[in-house]
Amino acid sequence: MDADTLVVAHTTEGARALPSQFPAELHLWKRGTALAKAPTLFKVGPTDSLFQFALTGAPGHRKIM
Amino acid sequence: MSLAKTYTQFQLTELTPQGPGDRPAIPTELKNFGSPVFTNNKVVVQLATAQTIDSKSYPAESIIAFDLATRHTSLVMAPPEGAFLTGGDYAGSRHGLTIVATRNLHGSCTPRRRLVTAGRSSSGLTEQPGITLAVAGDEADDAVLLNEQGFLVPPRASLLKSDGARSVIDTATPVMELSGYTVEIRSAKAERRCLHRLLFDAQEDPGRWADADDSGRLRRFRR
Image (tube, rainbow over all chains, first blue to last red; front, side):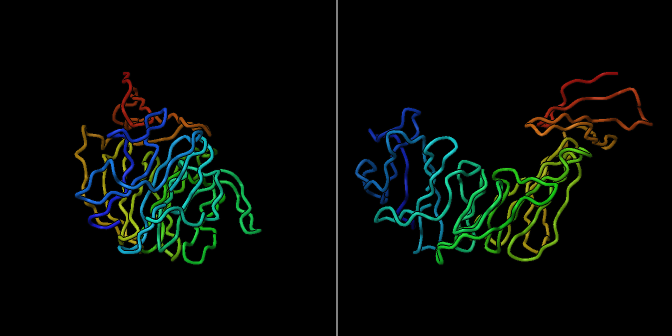
């Protein structure tokens, strides 16, 4: 989102994973903080297959699609 | 974000750091796993099936754009007559979209891929048979990255501007001398696989030929 704020999908440190082992959650991580404590932006439903994301928009007006 | 409900249904959702935003008026039956590209605050996807959006009909394979500011959907390109738009063969830049279309897959069996820049007029680029074009881009850039490669052409990367100007960035060295070859497409099916054949110069060595698979790798030689 900016130099110190990243959108992260991961399966480390006990983060939820789909049966396929793809990430099941999307997090907003601030540099210098613990990844495991990054707030959750999105969680997949129990029957969803996977998700992917991209950022769009100018710096300061970023959107997650 | 693109959420795959199944492997044919992809739900696009706008997210903000505060949580889910409005859902764009984009159908769920999309090509290329619903992966969008972006240009000028627009989300661009390709329809897998015919759809009606805001009382407007769009044929299957159409490339559509959803404007994040006006919340309106518009047609970028429907499949041109005699051509098809393969999933994901388009890229966004600051100036619009660059789209790769394939013509004449059947009939004359001479695939040609044409680059079309949407949003402003631009001369297209047509490549010779046997050459594959791929594009990549970013909405913040002025040009898109064009990759060309084929049976007789080693990979070549160029910057392609919206006015059609190309500047080569890098070209791979040919692994063998191929100047005596030509490419003819003898048959092609409306399937994923085509048979391509490399022919030697008939005057140089008419009895010698080689087949190549889809990736251009020589499979066998015969004298």
